[in-house]
Every structure is written in structure tokens, then in C-alpha cells.
Length: 144
Image (cartoon, rainbow, N blue to C red):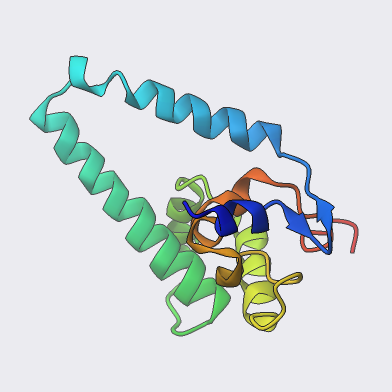
């Protein structure tokens, strides 16, 4: 992580963003539990993990939330749409409304670092994960 990425990440318009302690605790706990993997390793568990990563990430998020719901790139029967959306929800990246709204805001403001919630101009780490750890009320305003 470069110093630029770290210093640019937690500020917007010169103000510090507050940490989202729920997300910090959740991701911290998941990674702490992952440290136990060497003591409980099995090839079956690795295979299940890889399958679930593909199912939730590729099918649920990439195909479902991104291509199907956000961009409406294709259509499927409603029961299949609901199933794919449910699989996306299991990926723990937020509900479909939150995810789609955030991604549409991202596309709408790709040139505006302050309004793009995942702006790559804030650095690699911010655009891939650091944005999850900070409250961004001006982007994700639940009242409007």
C-alpha cells in the first residue's frame, strides 16, 4: 500500500471519514478465523471453498448483481433471477438494492473522486476494499 493510497482513502473534501466498525469487526473476525486454516486443512474443504467462491463471486455478484441487475444485460425467468440474486446476497457484499445503487453511482461519477464511492483515483486498495471500512453518507444516503 502506498502512502498516497492510505492518505487519500479516508478523506473526502478535506474531512476524515468515520470508520464503519461493524464492517471492520466482521472482516477482522473472518480473517482471524482464516488463520486457523492450517490446523483444520482438508482437500474436501478446499474444494468446497473454491466452489462457493465461484458460485457466490462469479454467479452471484458478477452475473447476478452486476450484469443482470445493474446493467440489465440479459433477461432470465423471474424464479431464476430471484435465485441468482439470492446467491449474490450470500456473497455478503450487501443486498441487491444497496449493491446496484452503489454501482450505478460509481458509473455516474467515475470522473468525480468525491462522489464515486469506489474511485480508483484514490488508489488500488481504496477501490478494491478500503471503501468498505468507512461510512460514506454523502454517497449512500438512505433517506433519499
